[in-house]
Length: 299
Image (cartoon, rainbow, N blue to C red):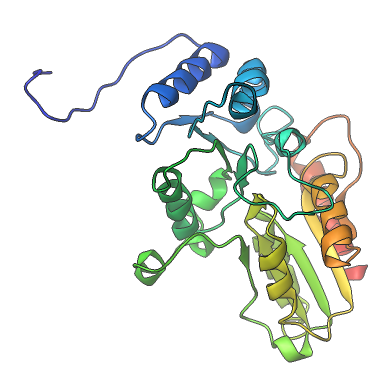
């Protein structure tokens, strides 16, 4: 391309090494803090090959060297029957790496070492990326981004959701139910809410069961959750429903924070503890998904 061009788009080939490429992107984000630097894995768990960069540099550079990075990781994550190597970005690992306080005293602010989010709409995605370059400081961002949501009608947003004055919402309340009649609240994160909402409506529980989407995981949004839960004053049952196994996903992260900061002990609904993340057999996947939904509503 001509060097006289003010702006240009350049495609560069690279070796198939997640560690090498993520290391380059981390360094590039340090040299160019005003640019949106994004590294996307083909599947979320492909970051495994770059674990050293995440552990040694990305998660702790600010604490160790007072060096800020705004590098954004897009990690596809979602259980669709694709098997153990193509389903999970190991979100539990990133949540464990966070220095978020379990007791939330003080509550999380921008002092955390990571931002971790699981957006479910196009507007939420937009606001996440926009927020990465607006402040005068930088934080690494991990975006748990299910591929199926890219083309799902439920993920569409209206133009008003992108208008001035709009922003990323850490918690999305349920505006389809009758808040004064709600006796049970189901909290989810990510695309799982679509299956849960469909099952709720099929069971005729639209008025009495609310589904809350936890979009921002770190910093943990205590105040946003508290304000949202206050919308359902008659709610007595609180369920955390996830598609991941019990020893994975966000369950181990959110449980103590709900108990310590919100005074709520959510009940778990999801797959049991597993040595792998997901099955690759479609029939088994469908049965597991059906069982997760059953538990969510029968608890």
